[in-house]
Image (tube, rainbow, N blue to C red; front, side, top):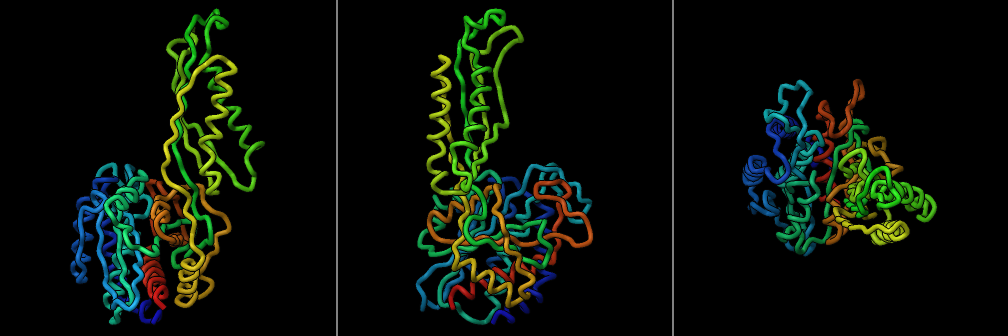
Length: 390
């Protein structure tokens, strides 16, 4: 049966390329995927699927019904949004929207989702259970999955598959990882509240800049000495705001940054650990503070059984050499993890790199994909869905 799935995907290759190029040429930012959603709905309807629109604001849900022999419900997730980047690829089908580009491969993700629908619809058999396809908005701002869940997209779902393109993996290959794939990512905002005074008499003031510097230094040092080195934490302050003039002691400094980690227990405990350190430093120096910790997304933790379905599909359809076992997780974030709070799942890395020329990273204005990935992605996803029911 996997050979039939691959053959159908190969036959559909020109159609898949057309779909991907259309989506690429018409990118839309997070939460504004109106034309993309309408286009996706049209393709799904042409395959005979009933489409529920405006799920998760601009998302879509469609189901391929099974025979009812198996009551399990399997979901396949594809994200649709683009980035605020001016494209510099020079492609014939480059973005027609100024300042907006599919620089993270979501045009490929959406195409693979649609291609999986087309393959399974054409396969000529009815699966034992139902497959629910989620076309999600706003992954780039880590909100879309939450919106979809709020609107019931995961109700009754037993397992879920997803994918993300990866330019360092050649087209035609697939990267898999058991366990942690991506990091949890949170936003942090710390405001140090001191007392202003003249720069010539700092002893009469409470210098928020000096205290903020100690907060930054202490946190970075404490990570290496108090956190388990086998459970890494990355804390990066990307912005500091404070002070009014060169000769005035600053009474307030705001630090904003990001926190990344892989271990679920660390993810649970890290906000309290950070705040305790900030509180102690401020108390020592007579300052006050405001601490805001915003949970964004947890870590993607791939389910072993579902990951095995992906690996077996790639090996059977493309050979063992087509599988790349990823040794390390990424400290990047993915809101696919939000779905994993509701059902086990796995995400695989779809190779989109070129063997004979430079490969630009994700979010780069010259990022391109090797379109060989489309058949590989559709075959892998449709094959993994089929294996799930066996």
